[in-house]
Image (cartoon, rainbow, N blue to C red):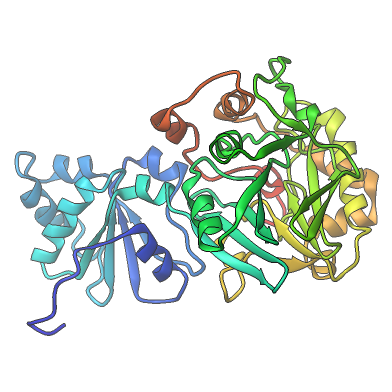
Length: 407
């Protein structure tokens, strides 16, 4: 770096996402408490070395009344070889304040250190859109939230748009349709989500669009209370139109009782929480795995009847490495038949697959029960509470609950 070059002191979440997409010399220093770090951390398409040193440990083992001196003493005397000098060190904390001070002291020690502006809260709120299909009569954009591994979609045709599985923050979807000069006419939740607060009802209210959900998912699976929200009924075989294109609804119970998938123009499968690229969805998040696992197996086998050329657009990604070179998470169904071990398993032996699902049950995360209440209109959650409920990586995939090569 030349003497006249400005010193980069921080990266935004968007800048970080771009850097995580390509291999480069980088190391992360996460100064959050260990339980926060264990719950979730930064991940990219390429592995990045990460060191978790809670800030309070630096203070306890350094000069407790001087933060700067504590950081300098810790990385000079306690862990002198922990940080590299041949690559950028990214300092991370919850909100970006503490890590900014740590990065400042590291730069004073001669390290190339930068801070994640806004910390993990900013990362949690970062979305990015990737074009999947760009045609004269049809466009599909995949709107992802890297911190959660959640994927949603905007389908545009003839000046109309349908948004599928929108996440909590609605601005990214409004930006996509505004950029394309379209109007949202329908919002669809393929199922009652457990891992994140849905933006579907809010987006429908703000745009005047119709909000669609299968009625079986309008009952909370634990409380057995009916939803308190306005929605249109999805049903198997139904056709939803968006401009000149059509979406066919396929009821595929198993992950939830009202779980659905959408087949667009016979060529694209918006699979929601059924088929993922390296695994499949779990059947136990509603607390009824004994009843739902056989349904899930039958639903997956039904989807496997679609043509090999069908492009699968999943509702979740277990790893950023699953994306293609353009950053899109998608794959032809024929390839997934060969490469997805859970799809091979269910195709070969339905009953053995059901037993596989039931063999290693896990406790449902308590926050998932509450998120389902919020998504059913049975409870309210502001921005801060929603953020707390959504902390951590989603565990809707089977690989989160089973020892599987799909992990």
